[in-house]
Picture 1 (cartoon, rainbow, N blue to C red):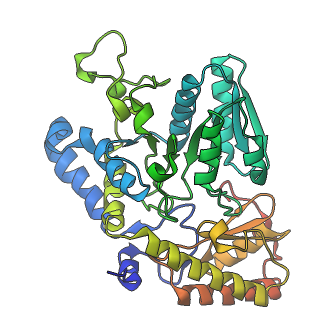
Picture 2: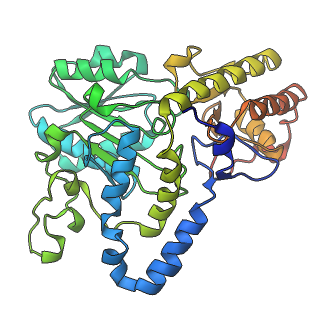
Length: 398
């Protein structure tokens, strides 16, 4: 049965007068999230107190939520675990991959990767002190740089600035041909495009839940480990909940079984409640339909903006199959222009040095929203309404 996108839009609490094109950075609030979190606070924490770990299933949350996310990304059952942050999960995955290829020293990434992933790689290299090298190349040269020296590729599938989409299947296949492993950051993929980790034979994947998945600010990250690696890797962050018997309180660490060993700290129970609310929506969604609709919206947006705003240059791939669910335009004064748009109710965001970024989620964005947004963008750009001092002042979050 086809998705009723009008019905899904009614499931989100969208402020009146706002066209929200920034779900690729922070998804809007599912209406049931308040009830879910209030139930955890008042009825579970409030009434059950510490017994909630058993009676309310708090300790099981990371696995249960992981399996629900796993359905969206084509993961095998019990091979995704939720918890901590995306950066922590990058660190875990990278350390695990390097431990499986001890004779190799090269981590291959690209200039379109999210900087935090690169920072985590740099930090891990320093901590290991074994002569590893972070090699970074242009996105379109990744395939050419995969050779027998590469231990692991560390790539974000969808470029956070431009929306450029890597071919996961091709890159993973080439990496495996040379004996390398792959880590895929799905921060801008999960909930935006179709992902099938089993089909593409990806080794590791990581992601966050606060963007397209709509779990809220600070919502936990997740990690996927392919079945063939799950019982082989030894976690570099040997947290007590990754222990085989956490409540035996043994003096030394023993890894838990499979994906459970990638747990680190105590689950964020209240934040996980809002993730549950979001996944109640996603459980009913066909990603193929979402992807098809998202392309329609993105194509409409590109056409309208290019027809009316010649000063904006398309920074995203023109081919819809070569990008994720976001559209970026470059403009020298992009920060000020975005602030002017936000002041008029069109919320996107800015990425240095000159990228105006707009995300499209069919669950709550429709054609009328796109046309209305384009009308405001045209007005702001053609009348130079962005050229005001108040819009030039950089806020801490852009």
